[in-house]
Every structure is written in structure tokens, then in C-alpha cells.
Image (tube, rainbow, N blue to C red; front, side, top):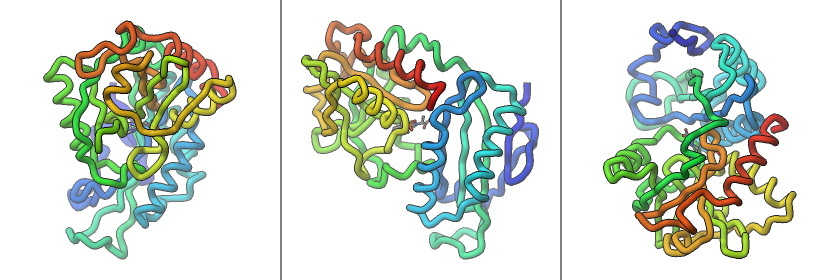
Length: 282
Ligand code: PDD
């Protein structure tokens, strides 16, 4: 069944949804995006996604394609028109179409595109069995806090992970884990403390990371926001990732070494449960 895709003011069957070949998103990856999960037809933690979208636009001096309230209204309309009760909503803003020039064009009109992906997100076999990850050097650009569509290197890393029989990759810079290819990385120390890298331009400021930090603190779970090495992660009690599509998903092996007993741990499982329970209020 064909989806209804939103493109610059129109709701179109996906086959008819098109952008110009001169669009700077295509030519320069001059575009930012957001992925919000949908549960029971509701966008989860969407205000935070919209705030981050605004921040990404501002950091790149990119105009809003329309007022943020209108973007939100369109998001709900796209979910409704596609009757998605569970899955994802993808939203992308590009600087728009202009004759090819490295400098930002003065007169381009930003493009706005949205589409849904219906899939089971709350019940996920990967969360039951846990993920195996490999580590790879973090060769991305240094403004990872801006959610741009420059996703070729993360794609290459996911391909490499698959070729080596793993589920995903964690990226490493100066001996420390930055984050996963499309998620934030966490470990659980033997005393139960959660560790995840502090916010900076080195990582994406994950919306799920933010919510999980809050849930943990509300439950008096100790948290340290700091970098950690691959060795520390391999020797940890548990490891897990967070993202809008994976929520909290356990990591059970890193570069072939089991984390803890090599099975999803209680902390990650517990935090996933809390996230799904609280998601309705986010
Ligand atoms: N990825 N780090 C990176 C590099 C990411 O691409 C993502 C999200 C995250 C987690 O952020 P959040 O909790 O806001 O989803 C961290 C999305 C899901 C994607 O690209 O599909």
C-alpha cells in the first residue's frame, strides 16, 4: 500500500512525492532531520524533537520552512493520513533548491518532507536477545550535535558490522567511545551506576538519552556523564543503547567479548520498561 508523503505543502502518494535535483539536501547533504517514534498513534517526546530541529536549523543558519507550530500540525496530519498506530515519523528540512554553489544561496526556499514507517517498535526481538556491536573509528565530522543527513559514514559502519556478523557499531575517538552509529551508548558499572558520554559537539544530543537520564535520576539511580573506553565497556556489568527507534536496547557483546554474562541485563531491561511505561506522558 502506498504511503502518503508530505512534500512542501502537499500530501501525495509516495510515487508522486519529488524534490528537485538541485535541492541542496541532495547536492551537499545540506539538510537536517528528526525521527520521532509513534506509539498508539501518538508522537513520543515530540516537543523535544521539535526543539532539537529548531536548534539544528539555527546552527546551520537555515530558515524554518514554516512556523514550528505548523510543522507540528503537519506531523500529526501525516500520522493520521497514514493511519500509523506504531512506527516512526521521519521529517527532513533541506536548504532548498538553488544553482549549485558551495555558498549558501540567498533566495532558496527550504524544503520540508515527512513520511511514516509503520513497524513494531515497542515489542522488538532485538531488545529480547540484545545486540552485538563492533567498534570502529569515529571518522564523522565534528559537529555531531547537529542532526544532519550526512549519514554515509554511519551507513558504511553498519555495513561493516553486518559483514562481520554484528548488529551495529560503536564509534571510538581518542580511545573513548563517542556513540553508536545511530544511537547513544551507555554502560552500567558493577555498582549500578549508569555512564554515558557528556553532551558536546562530539555526539548527538539524544532525546531518548535525555529522557532516560531523567527517569534514572528520579529513581535515585546514580549517573555519570563522562567518556568511557572500549575496555571499560567490555568489563562493565551491562551495556545498552538509546534512540527514538530502539528506545533502550541491551548490548550483549562488544568486539566479540560478552558484556556481563552475555545476556540482556536487568538494568537495561528495567529502563526499557520504564521508558515504554512513561512514553505515553512524554
Ligand atoms: N538516530 N546518535 C546518533 C548519531 C543518532 O543518529 C541518533 C538517532 C541518536 C539518538 O537520538 P534520539 O534519542 O534523539 O533518537 C544518537 C535516529 C533514530 C535515526 O537516525 O534514525
